[in-house]
Length: 184
Image (spheres, rainbow, N blue to C red):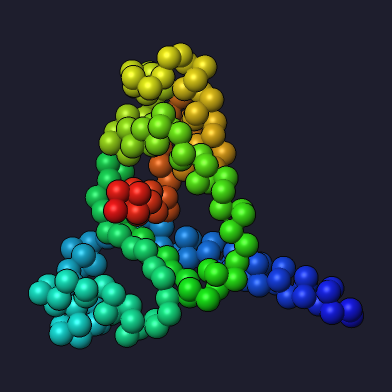
């Protein structure tokens, strides 16, 4: 096999492994039901010293102990649909090696003021097109459907039935993380 072909094959294999890991993490961690023991910091297997409430960097310190070189996002939140416990992490080296051009589409879908407001309103409880049409950013139902198509296509919203929209459980924490990033 020629060197260029081998490099292309290795890159494609690495991309495929990355995508399998991402999908496995989503399947394993999205919408897992939480009970009180799951949310109790004392119920974890972490040493109390490293996860103490008086340590402002407890998450970073624990991450460094368990997975040095990893970048992670996690959250345990209550939604109208119930509790969402979610985490996802990758090693920084893998993130830097990955082609970022495929990230433009999902980020672009959130890049319009009306679309980001639609997602926020859906997360706050407005699920029907009638409720969403009440938003000030939208001049017509045509604009609403245009923005909803963009968000559904990018995976930020799903439509389980006609005229009804939800944020998939696997996207709740990433959306909140993105808003934290944008506001920091």
